[in-house]
Length: 342
Ligand code: PHE
Picture 1 (cartoon, rainbow, N blue to C red):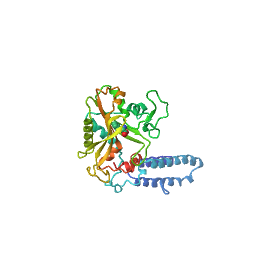
Picture 2: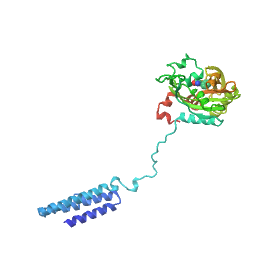
Picture 3: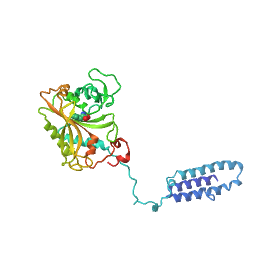
Picture 4: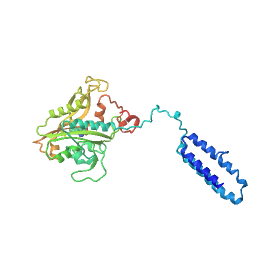
């Protein structure tokens, strides 16, 4: 009986190993472990054995039974419902892997940098948490200017330093102007500083965090004509050859004269429509660098002049034809349904 059981075990394991399908495996199970299977046939002979034989054969019997059922359940085939070729349809579409992409504002920043790189500007980055000196004082802001109030700018709760003042979250990228003058020391300077800015304002057209790109050019003989030429080049390259720019007189502490830069509306081509009303859209501020700012950056204003501009990345991106975003806050809502449209 011992030999019989051993043979049975070897046979069953060999069959399990060479089985080709789940059906075949099931047949093997029935053949050995089924109600009228071979193991039960042997069990029926137990009643004729002596008690001593019974216990030693019983041990072996259990051993063989569990070896066969273990082999059946660990066979790779047992996890397949059916391996019949009829159940596999190679013409069914596969499962698509979701592919992400860069944020539209990241793409806009890259595009803006490459437009300025082509005319010799270097992309620089300056702190987004900076001293009052770079954001306000060196830029000719008087002490009582409203932008220096807690209601407009986020100040960091740290003690003020002599000369540098308090720390703040930069409300504009103009803090890069004097920092760039300190880095380059002797002009020419041609920088574009793209960074995050922070202001206490939230509504459909404002987020407390946004981005600006700041241009600064300082050299001998720089005039408003250079500012106008650079603006036109940017507007035509970024928005399209049919768009025009115009400078409107304005006021900033750190430029004199100062301007607001408008670009012709891409929808009505400057004739006036529902979106722009008068045919022009406002891009942002610009002007000729104030002599006091050059002095703060240790550059002699009797020898050098310069122009600067600071424009919002989100605004500029939305003004590009074909991009309509009703609520600017959507850009930073992390809503995948919104972001996958770009
Ligand atoms: N810093 C100004 C703003 O945030 C823009 C500006 C930059 C104006 C450079 C003139 C020159 O509104």
